[in-house]
Image (cartoon, rainbow, N blue to C red; front, side, top):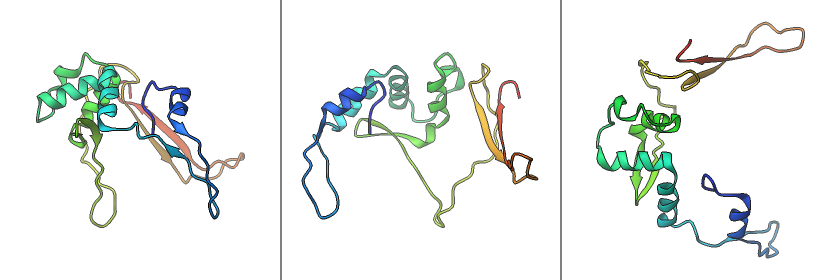
Length: 148
């Protein structure tokens, strides 16, 4: 696990490479730097996450589009995931849920309001189609919600 903006060197400084011979594998021990406070401080210092943290603390229900439309694309994406975001022990987390039978949960279709091209994309794989001379049978389809 790493944080946005943290370099490989910074992550490596926290690792202790004390390999002890084991039956069939080696282990790596990490210093316990991933405290809730450390994660909170890192999230609070990141501009987009800071906006979402402040909004989650201020509003129980998702704020209006007008409240976030002037922010970055990342803030808008996280705003769209509002119901799955929660603050646990001062750390912004995403809640994952599955149906009781193990299937994935699907949402009803809804209208998306976008303000710029490439702000919100949809992607799907279409196929199986008749095989081409090159052996291809699938097509990756990408649609821009703004320009369609």
